[in-house]
Image (cartoon, rainbow, N blue to C red):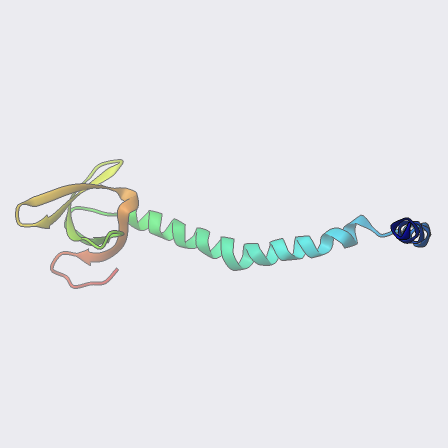
Amino acid sequence: MMFMSLFMSAQQGAAGPAPKGNMLTALLPFVAVFAIFYLLIIMPQRKKQKKHQETVNNLKPGDRIITTGGIFGTVMGVQPDRIELKISANVKIDITKSAVGAVLGAEGTGKAG
């Protein structure tokens, strides 16, 4: 019985005229949050990814690199989908291009890239 009276009073209080709002003002905060998210997170990440891809595409034999796994090595050959990496005197491995973490520069120059 008590629940019924509470339910009826809640319905009577909400029976007033519905507030009329502009759809644009309701969406404005969502648009603003998305714009800030895009400017602070997505755009810098795209720029960083594009620069890394350009660096990987410009690798040539003799360049020193570090893989994302932490292996230091010298590029011996570049194929369209992978890189042949010399990590020791008689040890060569093939890695994918996406595994390149950083380019140190050409062998013997000491240049950091």
